Length: 114
Length: 112
Image (cartoon, rainbow over all chains, first blue to last red; front, side):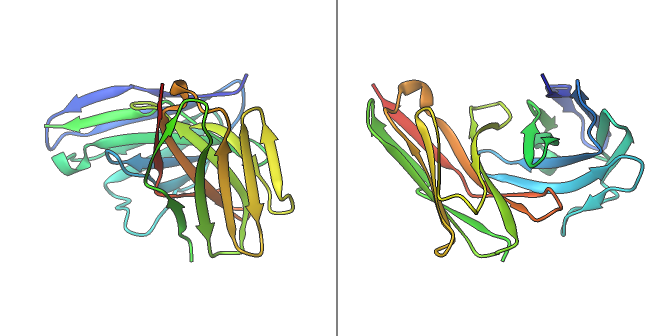
């Protein structure tokens, strides 16, 4: 069945480096994907909407130059955290519309910046 | 306007009891209301969802009650089990954008 996958599941990087997170739709095509961020014991906050073949739409307060989103194909969206700092440490989760209104989420990526 | 308010923040229920989580919204542009279950370190998983033209939906032990006039909806978990212990999020979808706005979450603990 339709599944949303993410890679890697966890990553540790040094402050100032960049890290890329992949979100893939398996067995279905996703023209739109969404990226969320979740801090410990908090809710999910929408960061941006990723549209295949066009620029991502960022939510208010999200730095588009820091969180680069590329949706190059119907099955892959990537989130690159550029010049990461400890405050960027979080749980990043992507999601995709499976059918009609149903939105399924990936397993998430735990980013730790040291 | 885009907020979804969820309560309670935490809930402790005995095994076999009923767990009830409530959510409220303001924006009438929301047209789809899902509930997600999330275990620590995992992504949220869809439990059950409802559209505003329906007042109740039941799937197994999970029931959503929806009150359109009051702009409120709730999740009822019947016969709660220790395996139901998790964080539950209500959400609301904004019109045709597909964007989901989440409530603050409820941590449920079911005691054996």
